[in-house]
Length: 92
Image (cartoon, rainbow, N blue to C red; front, side, top):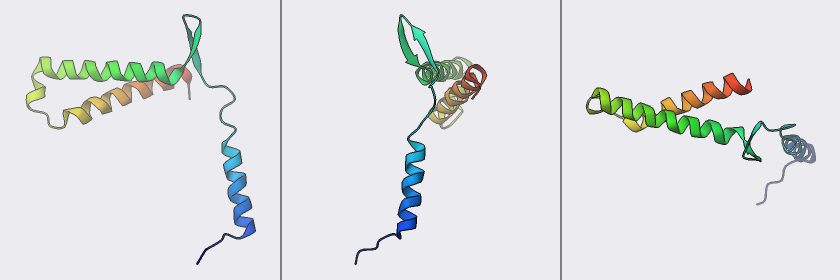
């Protein structure tokens, strides 16, 4: 048994999908060494560096032995830093 959607539902689904294909009018990007790089790459790198800094801080303070789930903590810290820097610089 094959189930088919009514024509109105197929049309509404097609319009919804076509509406999402437009994307942004222009993605935020930065020029490095004469090439355009998407802003998300820069902020991902900032987040990774923040996660590494948190890991180093945990080890140096001795909290690495007492805190469980350190991977999740470092990922969360990197995500928060990257998101805040994104919001402050791009304003999105």
